[in-house]
Structure formats: structure tokens, C-alpha cells
Length: 144
Image 1 (tube, rainbow, N blue to C red):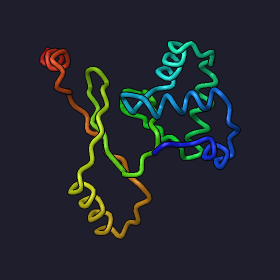
Image 2: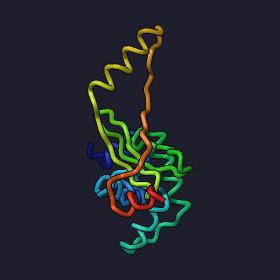
Image 3: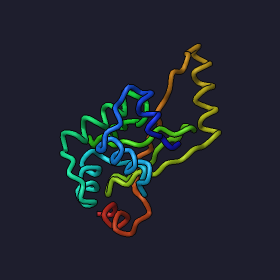
């Protein structure tokens, strides 16, 4: 989902250079999940003069406006990703922290069945699976 300057204004946010740069960075990120520090480092590498406090403030504003979603995984690190049209869940590597997305219709259906069983109206859900990714370094580290 690509956001435009119009979307920023519609969310009640002024179109500023830091907001545009952060939004572009998140939309074009190879790994969809970035911490505020990741965003700050990437902006610095691009030669952008945006402070860490500004990055935190903009990400919080984007979250409140429904542009990004914040995830707090067990490693106590908050990561942000652009809100997507289709819900997905996550796999998180305990060793390197790599985050992978997946969508499974069967899991989604079963979660809705459980909610119905308990006469529970879902407003949302989050499923995070923790383990060790297939990287040789992580596999080796998990054996020790």
C-alpha cells in the first residue's frame, strides 16, 4: 500500500521533508520491519539530517494515523512496518532477530472459529512464532 502526500494531509499531518523521507524509507525497505534506530541509521547513510527524536516522533504520528503498525516482539525491540491490506503473522528468529511474514488461511479460519466458540467478537489478533531461522550461523548458535 503506497501512501501519498494527500494521505499524510488526510491523516492531519503536514507534509514535511522528514515525514516524506521516513515514509519512503519504510515503503522501500528490503526488510519490512524497521526499528526507529534502523530508520535513523538509514537516513544518516543517505545524508539526511534527521534526528533520532524526530524519527521517534514521526513514527508515533504515523502509528496514530494508521499509516504504520508497531510490533513489540519478545526481544523488547519495537519495529514498525507500513500497514498492509492483508493481515499477516510473523516468525521471529531467537538468535539473529530476523522477522519473516506469513499468511495461512487455515490458521486464520481456526482463530475465527475459536472466537465464535467463546462468543467472542474479534477486534484483531497477533500471532508470532519464535524459533531459529535457517541461517547456518543461527543453526550453529542454537546447538550450543
